[in-house]
Image (tube, rainbow, N blue to C red; front, side, top):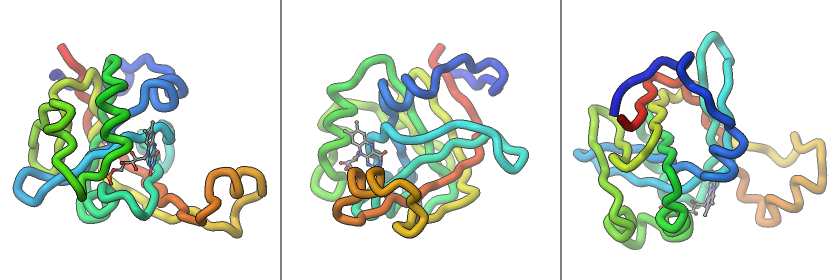
Length: 166
Ligand SMILES: Cc1cc2nc3c(=O)[nH]c(=O)nc-3n(C[C@H](O)[C@H](O)[C@H](O)COP(=O)(O)O)c2cc1C
């Protein structure tokens, strides 16, 4: 992996996040880590920072790690939809799902990513808040996505480092 500057990025966030999906990972070798597939999120500037936004429902095991750590990573892959589908339908509470799909965790100081990724965004949490029922302006969006009212927490993270495969 090599580090690049944000100005070197050319990407389409709609197909990258929504179409190809990503892995949200938090934790360390020493204290444990977990990962899950996400297909909702954003990239963009706010507060004089380049940021990502990710959405995590309360029942995800990964949330415990994102809440505990200062850093999280977003990993993007070429293909690997079968592996991402698995990581997005099983819980790390029940099994070593990373071993099951054969991805290789790379442990750094305070964060973890996967060696097979084509791009890794290392993010530092700036803001976290739960989505709230009373703030939905569109009833259909609320009912369609939250029939059980398990509202996501949104996490805004400052992009600290961008790694790409060589
Ligand atoms: C394509 C896809 C996209 C997903 N996107 C999200 C998401 O953006 N936010 C979320 O909370 N869960 C999302 N999920 C569900 C989690 O990845 C899934 O519940 C996962 O098993 C949680 O694992 P964990 O309990 O080990 O954290 C998605 C699942 C798939 C398959």
